[in-house]
Length: 360
Image (cartoon, rainbow, N blue to C red; front, side):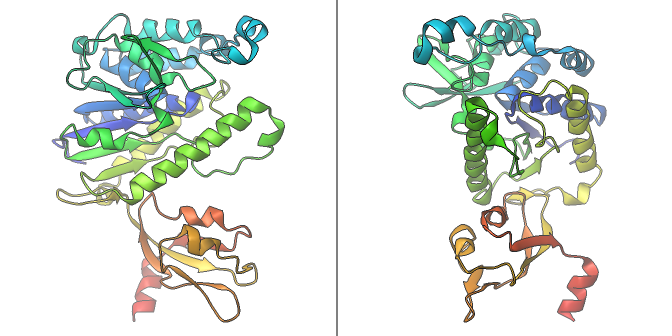
């Protein structure tokens, strides 16, 4: 990315894993690459709002590293005891409200030092509402941010102008399409979701963990569809390696911030992987070789359902065969691999030497 590139920074949701966004901002600031706009969802909205309100990266790091569970998540025991199934949420609203107020105060979007858009959803109409866009700037940033963090079931819906809003991740956890309306040359999207990481024993961790895992799977599936069909402006997609950390984890705060920094510096240190003016799609793009282990394949046809049409066929022995082993993949590609029930499909980077040997 060039110093004069006008880009929009999109910060996705992911609970406490979103503290990685502070490291992202630290890296961009050090390199003299401030975003023209920030679009945030859930914790991405919280971090983006604090920075847009004038908090320095050093201040954000200090707040992040001092957080304790009681500062964000306190179980609503009274509501659950007396209201039971009509309890508005698992956690009380007050701790998060106080944290948000501490970071952004009473500012409206018009008062922010840097442009910000916050992603929410009207829980009754299912309408996606993007606070900070023209005509939606006069509300308190704190209200929009709380609504964006209000994952259904975990935190109660938040009232703004007589309507009730919840986490924008309900429809779009990484709202890159919103960035398209802001007119930048490039979108730098930072995803801190669980991705397709394997989780062990979720079924034994209680209903909250099961619900969260199901939510993560739905978010990832929607994101894959959006990225696969994306054209312009080009996206550079970054995914700090925090998927192994729980959204409610307070034991790895420093690791999450540092990983956001590391991932962003690593991306900026490889300018050849970034899109050039006029490019389309999602970057970085990399050559991979897709293989099917025949001894594992049972011929169920899941790959024919999940992969792009024509990529796999079933041969005379009832085994899956990949028609074009060498491919160029963007970050949104390859989701079909995890849908093989016998883990027979794999992909690995194609080396330059291997490519030349095959072409020769």
